[in-house]
Amino acid sequence: AASPRQTLGSLRESLMLAPRTPFNIQISEDRALGVASLSLDRCKRAAKHHGVSLNDLIMALCTSALRRALKRRGRLPERALVAGMPVSLRAEDDGESNNQVSMVQCELPTDEPDPVERLKRIHAATDRIKHRVQAFSELIPTDFPGLAAPFWATGLSRLWKQGRLSERLPPLANLVISNVPGPPIPLYLAGARVDKYYPLSIVTHGLGLNITVQSYAGSLEFGILSCPDALASPERLASQLVTALDELEGGVEEGGTQS
Image (cartoon, rainbow, N blue to C red; front, side):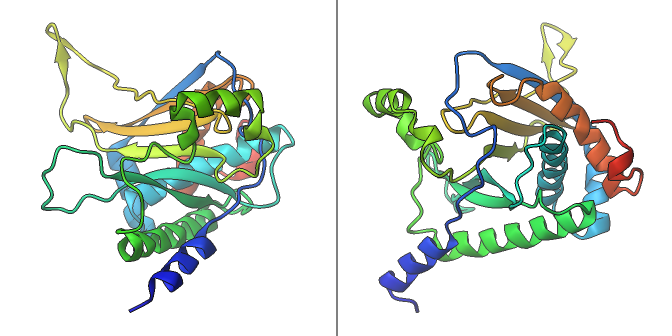
């Protein structure tokens, strides 16, 4: 078995620094929202066809959409983006009423032009993450709000804002992408069916873009929240998710889609 020093060394070696993007800024009080719905069955079929998990496919769709958005603005980094991705550390037989969630880094290969190769790289990245979480689960902090934890302490939040530290320190992630299961059957409110169940999360200083995905009654519901200074039109990013799914089904070439 590895010694504690070796284990900590492995953790340090696995830490990535993300390239700086327009999303890694000091945010304002304004927010913009984009939403999208994709067929859950269609996404599952595409994932099965490529031999990957549904989460891998979702990350690939987000990667393709982000690549287009940054390329259109002339801001696509040469290196791959990095997403902060929440993971559950709860054991299957653990029924305690507490949070056992942490945040890991997942490479988003926006530097890869081929959509299938992007998916393969994401699958390899998430496989490495699973092994690290299993190996280091006792050392990973739980009840942890994310890579931007200082924002939750009032004093540190003021210091972070006044010093604009989010724009001066190397980013650990470019955005947060979260995928959570939701109700598989339709919900009703006062007798009316809830047609859409778009999730809504938060953005923080240094992480001005958040993509949250939730399954609902046969759909994958995407809620894309941004600070407009980071991404003015998240609805355009949302529309690219459909194109990204078409690509992985062999329907469209990257150069022939809207941007």
